[in-house]
Image 1: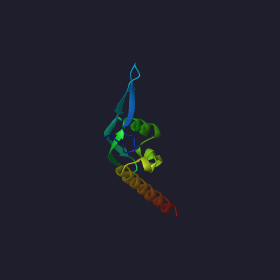
Image 2: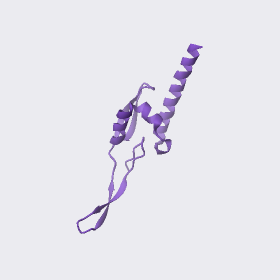
Image 3: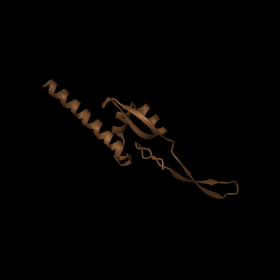
Image 4: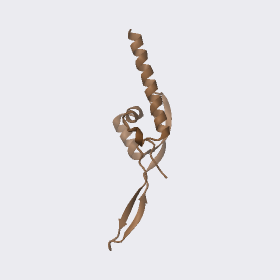
Length: 103
């Protein structure tokens, strides 16, 4: 089953309705691709299974870091949550180092 690790997008069941109004069940799979995404905060590539609609959103928002920090955690996979935690830790360390350098 194809599931996006960032948005939680998964297959949906829909009805194909013929001219004679006969309804036939069909599943529509999301377009999920295995992508290597660059995280500026980590300075590293992260491999995730992501829907193409999420890839467009990533580029529109301004990168993996900004997208993943705004995303709802209930929709994300365990691997994506681990990446988010790593990004948050790295950003906290950078901000702590900046404040320590100013004082």
